[in-house]
Image (cartoon, one colour):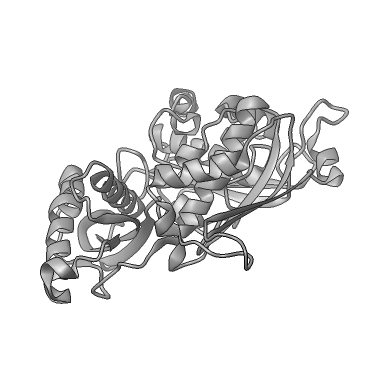
Length: 398
């Protein structure tokens, strides 16, 4: 097998789709803070001058949706001017409009998710979820998505701390890694950054000079600090704002929707994805909770040195507590057959939805902070990132 290239991308918190994810999860957090048993499926759309939230919610909580939405936009760094304003009627003022369309959860869903006669909580939907881990980084995440997230985070950091005060919230990163014939990362081949910025033509007179100023500063303050921190060789093949200028961005330039960055949220395309988004969903939805659980299982398997890389799949039926299936793929890096690992998982981990929620402590208002820069590889503040099962798993080898 020859060397090959693999790329992943990330987006900043100001990307319109990520803005919507953060609004949906900020609403979820506010509901869970008052009522941890809230059932929530919250979708957000943002466009020029308008935020629309449509949700299926059953809760005892009372929250100010408008205030939460506007606070989230402010924390991201968007002024009302950045978001655009519209006139809804002839006699109305130009402003950012917020619409909320809320209804109760379907009783046919609730009857399957509430505790059954065995005192078990059924899955909130049918579907399949994947979790993944590998030993390419200290976080046990694939290197391409890890570097992409760190670059996007760095873009936000230097914008907010004033290092590059001319940056605006919208942006993207993309990293291409060269892998050797043993599937080990050996070099960063390309880094792509697209970042919104203020109009500086008055200062630089030409687009070429403006672009050169932006490129040199992004390389110095964003790209190099991240790459140097990971200590992997890299080509100085850096592409910044490939179109030349990126002044008009955010919701003025693009419509944003919740759940449209599922690959950014997970493993950057390096592992499979079951198709279900995370943001705006309470943990009774296995799209979210089981995806966190499979990451937890895969990470503990790799941390226990049972495999160099591990992908775990589970599948559920709505209203049924036990998963329909469990599958493991260690890509021929496991110290035991994959079928034996499945048996081991079933011994060590309880995959019923209520047990997942309890073990990973998922009824806490923790989701807004996960809605940008990935849900995995974020440190031990999140229970699904803790490798507390590695010794128990290792003991089965003795």
